[in-house]
Image (tube, rainbow, N blue to C red; front, side, top):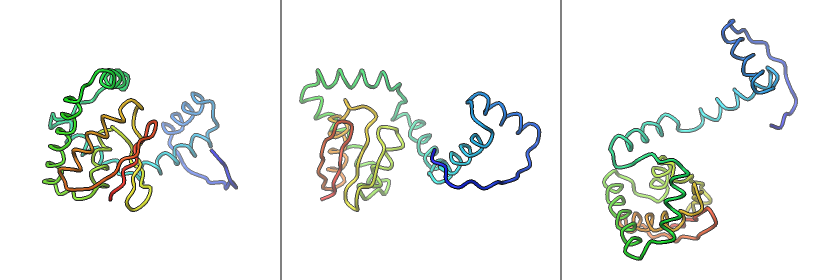
Length: 178
């Protein structure tokens, strides 16, 4: 962490909080000040995110039983196997499933590429980065899922009548609204 000019701040803590702070400092081999700075930085980052709404969306998705949580190692192994052995019928099925999701998203009131990508981001399939007004970067969890995500999203956007172009990277997809 880059540290600029420091200012002294005096705070009052109860005994329980001091004990916790000291335990964290000892465990991490940091000073009390470093632990407090890190805690404030993390709290600040969390407060800027849509943590609570994303948790609600995640719970809605999981409780609908249309989605599952899967270990990343297992997911990577499955994606490796799919890429190695899947035929054209499989890839058409992936696109069809995406198409069906797109119809659902349309019914949910989603109308643009960004809102769809942000909803899917909650499933932890990828992270979305806004590159420009019409271009989004998708950072994937593993590099072996590029084709799977691309085919799925192709179906989603076709069913919603949204024209997009994809550019593939090693662990990324660029999605451009055209």
